[in-house]
Image (cartoon, rainbow, N blue to C red; front, side, top):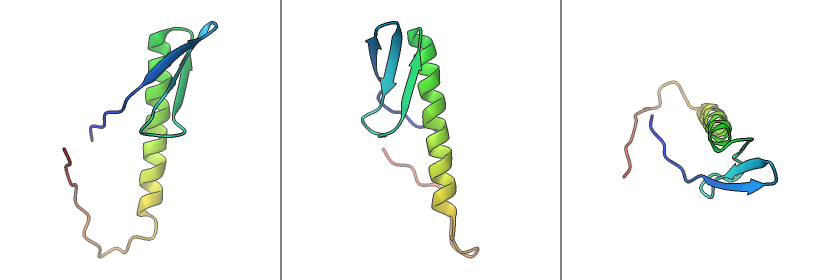
Length: 71
C-alpha cells in the first residue's frame, strides 16, 4: 500500500522536528533532516499498522474485505 503525507520539518536548536497536518500525533526528530525524515516515516508506519489492527478487530469472518483505491 502506498501512502503520501505532508511532512512539516522545523529546526529547533540542534534538532529537526517533523509533524504532519493529516495525521495528528505523528512526529519525528533527528539531528539531521534525513534522520528526522526517517524517524517520521517510522512513526507514521507504526501508527498506520496500529490503526489497521484496531480497525479489523471484531470484523466478522464472513465479511467482504477488498482494497479500494482513492485518488
